[in-house]
Image 1 (tube, rainbow, N blue to C red):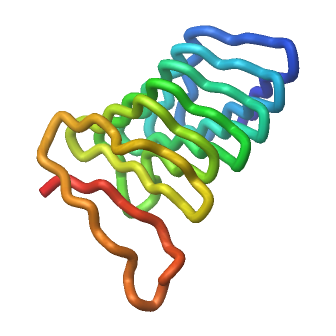
Image 2 (cartoon, rainbow, N blue to C red; image 1 turned 180 degrees about the horizontal axis):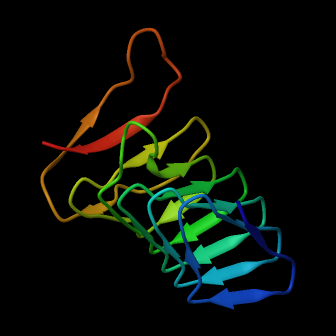
Length: 138
C-alpha cells in the first residue's frame, strides 16, 4: 500500500489513486481533479480541500470533520466494502451517478446531492439511531 500526502501549502492536480492506495489531504492542502479507483481511498482531513474528484466503482472519499469536498462525482460504489463518499465535514456539489452512494455521518453537512437517477432517502436502522443517511438508487 502506498500513501501519498498533500500537506499545507501544497496543491496536487490530476492524481489517480488505485486499489490499495490512499491519498491524504492535510490541513492547508488542496487536491484537484483526483480520480479514486476501486479499492483506493481519498481522506480529507480537518482544514483540507478536495475539488472536482471522481470516485468510481468501489473507490472511497472520506471527508473528516473540518474537511471540505467540492464537486465530487461518485459512480458505482460497492456498498459491501466501500461507501463512495462518507461525510463528517462539508461536501457541496456532489453528483451521484449510477449506483453512487453518499453517507452523511453525524456532524456532516451537505445539501442534497445532484443525482443522475431517482433516489430515495432512507432512515438509519433502529439499532443505529445515530447512523448515516444514505442516498440510494431506487
